[in-house]
Image (cartoon, rainbow, N blue to C red; front, side, top):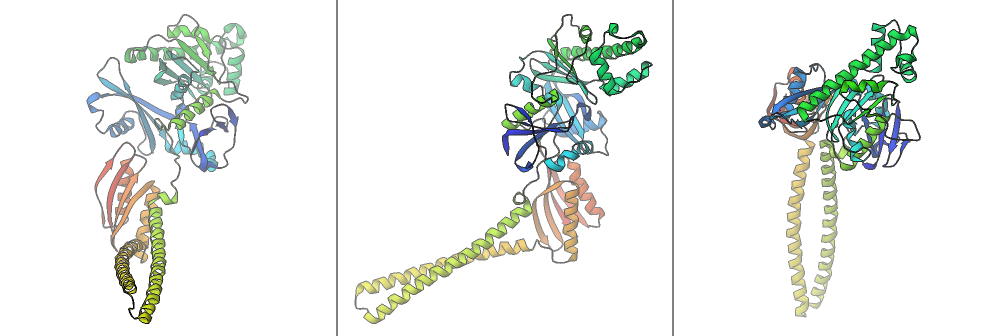
Length: 499
């Protein structure tokens, strides 16, 4: 997989960016198998939840605890499937860890990336936007400081807090579409998102820039942004108490990568008297790209180079090649065994023919000379001894070939012999595909019983349980497992199936 160059898929402007450590250039995805492909999710598509956990409990089934918390406290829908990631953060004031968990609705994300996946086939890294700012400090684009990044666009808005260059928290904010609805609700004006942006860019939040008939519109906008900055200020106070976050040193603000007039006045709501407002703009490129997409591209490039898969929300993994799958391994072993058997047969025939020919020639000379010399007799004796040794070696190799034949016979037993067995294999295969399970090992105990070792790569043990339940409901009289074990990446279970 080529990681010196990455391809970034943007869902904002439906473009593809190629980055190789120097330039961001337009690109197309033509041969996805050889490419490292990345993208990001929108902040509003992420469900976040922060909770405390005792330090002594950190090692006790943390993934299970987090999953339960997300369903019970963050309101995840039990009828949907989610990808969940988390960060462990240490509090400055309590003897506990703070867990910030993130979840995305798989079905919703699949719909958003459906168009790109028709060509890309996979996405190696799916980034969270508020974590991407770490790359600005890593690549010396920004000096480490206590920063707040405020980003607002049509369908996405948030504030991300960084302490001395390290991410500590984020908060959802009203999007431009939300703000447009607020304007319609509290004024006599009706605005679409594009009209609202034009108004903010041209007149901003300065009342003198509005006609008298638009004063109520300006008042409403000022109220909305006052609420936004008050919300950010409250989060800053919370961060100060929990993480020892000192005063805000810089504020990076943008609405679609542009500033608006009069926004500086609202810094006072953050407890800031001086102007420390900066543009949310860090890259100058030949093509006009969304700045957050460029930040995410560089962030994913760093991740690819370092082979760091932490905080990766992707659900669009590369498909394993045939020879890495269990059936591929069986096929490879079968092919190698057949090849070995064939080659050894040729070798055996060739070696025996040569020795027999030499023996016949010498034996003829021996008959003609009638043991006239001791040398001839000794040579014949050695050849006879060598032939006996070879016959012993051939016998040993024949036994090895028989063993290979036994293995081949066991492999062929995996092939369906009748309609019932065929149905059994088809049922199991369909359910494995349904629940995205992988087979690590398969063994046939009898014509009516199979043992499967399966893995849930989605790190959800309930998919294994559902797989077993569907088999039971399909009239299989025996579907059992000793246990379902799990680690940080997957759950594994050894299942016996009888029909």
